[in-house]
Image 1: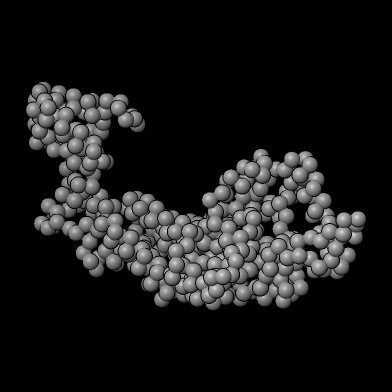
Image 2 (image 1 turned 30 degrees about the vertical axis):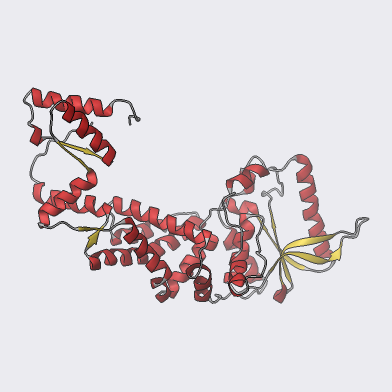
Length: 390
């Protein structure tokens, strides 16, 4: 593809001039199409300078004209503001009628919106931190508590893995404390106390998530920092064993095959931890319906992007079911669950979106292309068209 200023408009103008002067085409037999209004304007102005008047349109304007000509009336175009209203109406109001959808959304945003990575895939700690620098590390529990008591301090965790674990515990009605000060001192000259990653008070169970690989190493750290970190891990293990403290461990290398949540749930169940859904509708309303949330905004952007790509590919509701079937063939359970959650969320939203357009008699920009393409196929499928791309 040629870049800006490379002479595309000049080349096209020259080709048009040649076609007309050589009598190979009349001006009213030529149609110039571009993606942008700016390019159409430039082509038209350049041709006017050499006294040539041809039809130049954007793809969307051509589509709109084809639809208008076919149905003998100009369709109503859904503005960006109108489309934003549809999305807001669905995810702030309509969604409350679909408890299962609320569950899907909360699960997706708290466990699957961001894709965790095995920390050993990074050359150093700085690269890992930089990779996830735009993530909102405030837990769902913290956001929920602040809705009823704004004076409650924000609870932010240090790592994406910690965020995923904390949110999983909260959404499954498991009380937890983060960075909990362990009551027993290390039996050495420093008499130092440690902080546990998580403690589940109701079960007197401690949960540690270690940033290590399968060999128990943390090679992303400098040699000195790795020695300190591994010594801290050993100190925790020894203290827990010494005082007969129940604890479970998870590791960052679980993210290599994206199995952190699966293995976390398995370990919790093996330790008789009861998992049950929290009041998901109340959580959703308080955090996402009645206030602005950075994570939710990221999710809405993802929905908008997928909607645009989905419709620009002229896909329909039945294609979502096909995608769900294809998704079952994935071997990676994390990505399989992520895709399944998202497609089920999108399917319900897409049905609402299309019905909203239909009920108001509007079409969006992708419909201009899709519907006009269908009209052309219907009316000219047996006609040979000469189309040249430049």
